Length: 306
Image 1: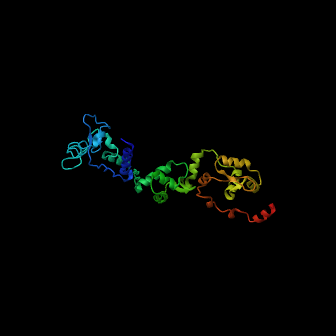
Image 2: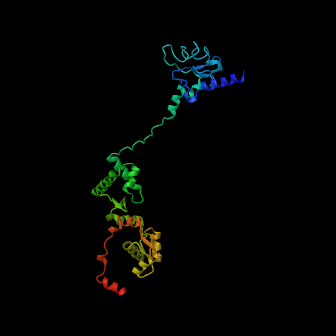
Image 3: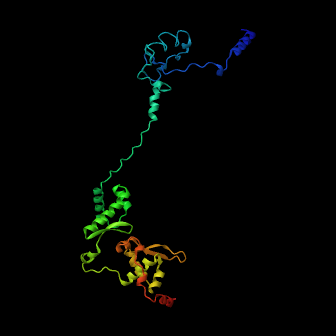
């Protein structure tokens, strides 16, 4: 071939060349297209092929492609029934999982989530059951217990516990029992009645004296009415050093530290819940007023000490 013929051939090829973005795209395979297995294969991923897709270099020639009778998608029974209904994918056609119909159920299953399991609600106790449960708990407590704690333990509404405790306390009082249910130190607890205190003391103490000394009672009274208060302030009110008495009250759990004074940095003391429990009080506001116990010449005594 001469140089002119070669140049003419290259020019013809350049003129007939079509850019890739202008070329017609081949039709995409549909869901009804057959997934067939090559004869003699073991059903592995390499043997699964979509009908109409050329498998050999010469498959695009007439008679070797999808248009050949008995070898393409139009053959009945390969993946479609005679009426045109889509057939089932043969077992072992694992290659159809990529972009094929067999991949759809698996993808849907991955996206499923289980609904959260809600806990079963606690059973609602009847009034008789709630009353019995409260009485059983109050018999074993060693300190006053609040209504909120009782409601959490019994898994009941706090609105029911308070009125039921009031009803139980009123029932004990009306029946004349030797004990009563009282609110003390922010909670509820069973106490013996004051009219039977002498018999209880005789049984518990058995001749032993466990009462506080006069100095301890005076110091405890100063802390109760002046709290929070420092040691120096207590000593100034009593007129004597009270360090040893304060340590005794702290050891017995009647007094506790509650911070420091801003100016001097001295420790502050206050009464504890055990103090309220022993006196049968709910708050320190229920302490009796001091005015009836003060002497008539208290102002003169105060001026004399200045």
